[in-house]
Length: 360
Image (cartoon, rainbow, N blue to C red; front, side):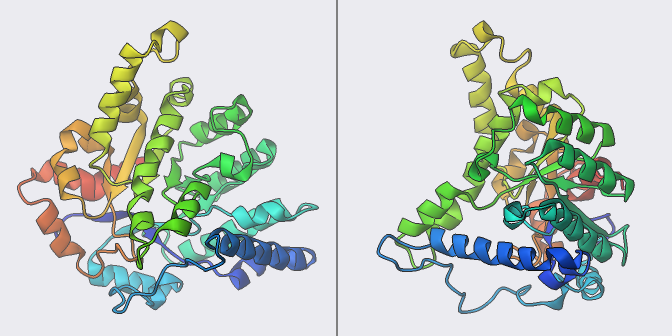
């Protein structure tokens, strides 16, 4: 594995408020600070039990090895940590909530904040654009605004874009609504993949609130399963059918559940009258294999199921610096996970597929 090109399809960086504000006009600073405070207060409110007890994630007694490293926010240190792990390039998620706090800004502040955040991410990438690939966030309230930011980012060399996982949590229509069609057309034209990162939703916050376990183990176990909604949401309403060159990546989705779910969707098309309504021309699994990819860290069962999912649809990741991270032992993890896998297939999953869809 040390001789292969290794690309993490899902790692993380922290873009700090001061970095964003350095790209934001002074007239927006107060609104920005207030919007961030309101957002944090709302998150805290969601994570309280009915009795008023907080249910924040507990600290681990023995932090994982990547915890607290400067590479989370310092690009120079990040490149050093990548070298330790012998990872050639990383797709970097900067905000899994996708700029939710900026939606509360007014008088042009929202668009300015998204642009400022993305400019701060461009700064991070500038230290080595061939190895550091931020995933830039796209606003979705005003579609003309969305299209402008997509086109601006494409001109700046962006390789990946991210949208909120559940627009309905923002009181916005589902992505199947035709209001988004100009956005899908614009992204399709750029050839840049859309990322959907597993993340918090109102439903998951509700589960966290009543999870009785000290480590919030129920809550922690469920996010990958919630990605089934996103998978179905892109395929079943026909979005991928109408935009056949659009690529969607489900991030930190895990793998093991996908073969069953694709089979279920295909069976439902046949047995639940979907053809009567003219819902899809092809089986749902056809659109998944043609236009969707998924990322994983440690998922030996999923790798065993790779031919059912599609070897061309799988991308391995380190998830640095989060608790699931394989840093600094990624080489050992790769040797274990791909033991017995033909080298041509392993090569695709550990870097080839990511290189293809991100144009590396």
